[in-house]
Image 1 (tube, rainbow, N blue to C red):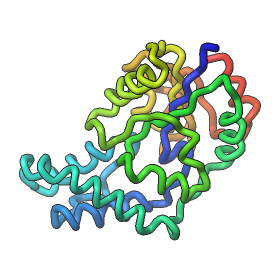
Image 2: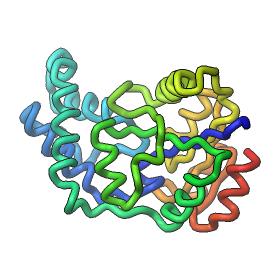
Image 3: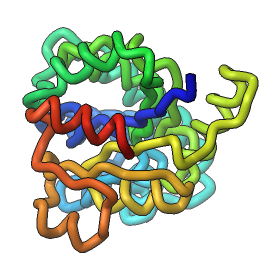
Image 4: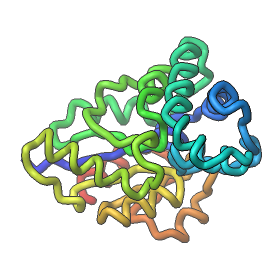
Length: 231
């Protein structure tokens, strides 16, 4: 069977982080660099945590070599902050997400993965806090692995090839995200894209970037599944 590959973004797509990511990123930056930069005014949407850390520290005047040498420590500090706070995180899955994932995880037609700007080690704790089982995603690429989000799909393709011992046609992959950067990322890799107006970008704004599919959210599960079966 030629399976279809679904790559889900996390923040703004599967779950509403309710500001928790910003809160613990600030603490991690203060722990490692002593400053958090202009984090409250900075637009994180669709960016990798690698880019976010780099941009904020440059804006704060931190030497580029110091940023480079402490970047991994900042990722680790952030993931540890999220893990320690996991039981009390105010994170929720968006409407439709949990029943949709329940259907997908039992459907042999689909392979489920992640394509997210999040630090890899923080992801399971954020998903758990939203009531999403992290183990249903067998592979993925993460925002601590490359600064440029457009390079993450190629990491996914490499990992899929290793899992399946065969290449995956990018056209068989659908990226599901909530920002114009998700659209650009999918296009760069030759993948299809479903945009959701669940994050900070409304439907009209997303439409200007011409995603293959555009929905308000994932609540109309039968309609969503129809897209997944025909893209």
